[in-house]
Image 1 (cartoon, one colour):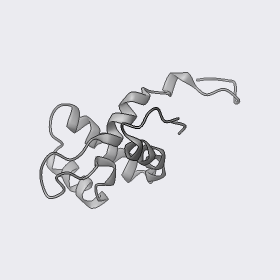
Image 2 (cartoon, rainbow, N blue to C red):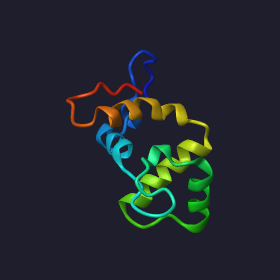
Image 3 (cartoon, one colour):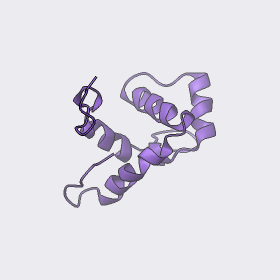
Image 4 (cartoon, rainbow, N blue to C red):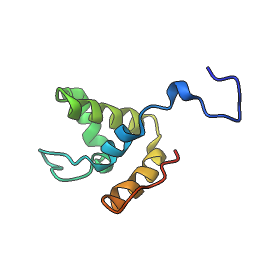
Length: 96
Protein backbone atom coordinates (compact mmCIF):
# COMPACT_ATOMS: atom_id res chain seq x y z
CA UNK A 1 0.00 0.00 0.00
CA UNK A 2 1.24 3.47 -0.82
CA UNK A 3 1.93 5.48 2.37
CA UNK A 4 2.00 8.87 0.60
CA UNK A 5 -1.56 10.27 0.61
CA UNK A 6 -0.73 12.82 -2.09
CA UNK A 7 0.52 10.42 -4.73
CA UNK A 8 -1.71 7.83 -6.39
CA UNK A 9 -1.27 4.21 -5.48
CA UNK A 10 0.38 2.56 -8.47
CA UNK A 11 -0.20 -0.96 -7.13
CA UNK A 12 -3.91 -0.78 -7.99
CA UNK A 13 -3.92 1.66 -10.86
CA UNK A 14 -4.72 -1.04 -13.45
CA UNK A 15 -4.51 -0.68 -17.18
CA UNK A 16 -6.28 2.37 -18.62
CA UNK A 17 -6.48 0.70 -22.05
CA UNK A 18 -8.63 -2.04 -20.49
CA UNK A 19 -11.00 0.62 -19.15
CA UNK A 20 -11.17 2.29 -22.55
CA UNK A 21 -11.92 -1.09 -24.15
CA UNK A 22 -14.66 -1.58 -21.57
CA UNK A 23 -16.16 1.79 -22.52
CA UNK A 24 -16.16 0.96 -26.23
CA UNK A 25 -17.37 -2.66 -26.10
CA UNK A 26 -20.92 -3.33 -27.23
CA UNK A 27 -23.05 -6.29 -26.25
CA UNK A 28 -22.71 -8.74 -29.19
CA UNK A 29 -25.93 -10.73 -28.61
CA UNK A 30 -29.19 -10.99 -26.72
CA UNK A 31 -31.89 -8.51 -25.76
CA UNK A 32 -29.39 -5.65 -25.50
CA UNK A 33 -27.36 -6.42 -28.62
CA UNK A 34 -25.45 -3.32 -29.76
CA UNK A 35 -25.73 -1.47 -26.43
CA UNK A 36 -22.51 -0.36 -24.72
CA UNK A 37 -21.63 -2.72 -21.87
CA UNK A 38 -21.42 0.24 -19.48
CA UNK A 39 -25.03 1.12 -20.39
CA UNK A 40 -26.52 -2.33 -19.78
CA UNK A 41 -29.33 -2.26 -17.20
CA UNK A 42 -28.27 -3.51 -13.78
CA UNK A 43 -31.05 -6.11 -13.64
CA UNK A 44 -29.78 -7.61 -16.92
CA UNK A 45 -26.19 -7.82 -15.68
CA UNK A 46 -27.37 -9.40 -12.40
CA UNK A 47 -29.45 -11.89 -14.38
CA UNK A 48 -26.42 -12.76 -16.50
CA UNK A 49 -24.32 -13.24 -13.37
CA UNK A 50 -26.88 -15.75 -12.13
CA UNK A 51 -26.82 -17.64 -15.43
CA UNK A 52 -23.04 -17.45 -15.71
CA UNK A 53 -21.01 -15.00 -17.76
CA UNK A 54 -19.65 -16.16 -21.11
CA UNK A 55 -16.08 -17.38 -21.24
CA UNK A 56 -13.25 -15.18 -22.46
CA UNK A 57 -12.78 -11.43 -22.67
CA UNK A 58 -16.50 -10.63 -22.91
CA UNK A 59 -17.18 -12.57 -19.72
CA UNK A 60 -14.37 -10.74 -17.92
CA UNK A 61 -15.73 -7.39 -19.07
CA UNK A 62 -19.27 -8.28 -17.97
CA UNK A 63 -17.91 -9.41 -14.59
CA UNK A 64 -16.26 -5.98 -14.21
CA UNK A 65 -19.52 -4.25 -15.15
CA UNK A 66 -21.36 -6.41 -12.62
CA UNK A 67 -18.94 -5.61 -9.79
CA UNK A 68 -19.14 -1.89 -10.48
CA UNK A 69 -22.94 -1.85 -10.69
CA UNK A 70 -23.68 -3.97 -7.60
CA UNK A 71 -21.27 -1.92 -5.50
CA UNK A 72 -22.93 1.37 -6.46
CA UNK A 73 -19.89 2.63 -8.35
CA UNK A 74 -21.62 3.51 -11.62
CA UNK A 75 -20.31 7.08 -11.35
CA UNK A 76 -16.99 5.57 -12.43
CA UNK A 77 -18.54 5.09 -15.87
CA UNK A 78 -18.91 8.84 -16.52
CA UNK A 79 -15.31 9.41 -17.71
CA UNK A 80 -15.64 6.20 -19.74
CA UNK A 81 -18.76 7.49 -21.50
CA UNK A 82 -16.79 10.59 -22.55
CA UNK A 83 -14.12 8.32 -24.01
CA UNK A 84 -16.71 6.28 -25.87
CA UNK A 85 -18.30 9.42 -27.37
CA UNK A 86 -14.85 10.72 -28.34
CA UNK A 87 -13.79 7.45 -29.98
CA UNK A 88 -11.66 8.07 -33.01
CA UNK A 89 -11.24 11.80 -32.33
CA UNK A 90 -7.87 11.73 -30.63
CA UNK A 91 -6.64 11.17 -27.08
CA UNK A 92 -8.81 11.74 -24.04
CA UNK A 93 -7.50 12.41 -20.57
CA UNK A 94 -8.70 9.53 -18.37
CA UNK A 95 -8.76 10.66 -14.77
CA UNK A 96 -10.87 8.41 -12.58
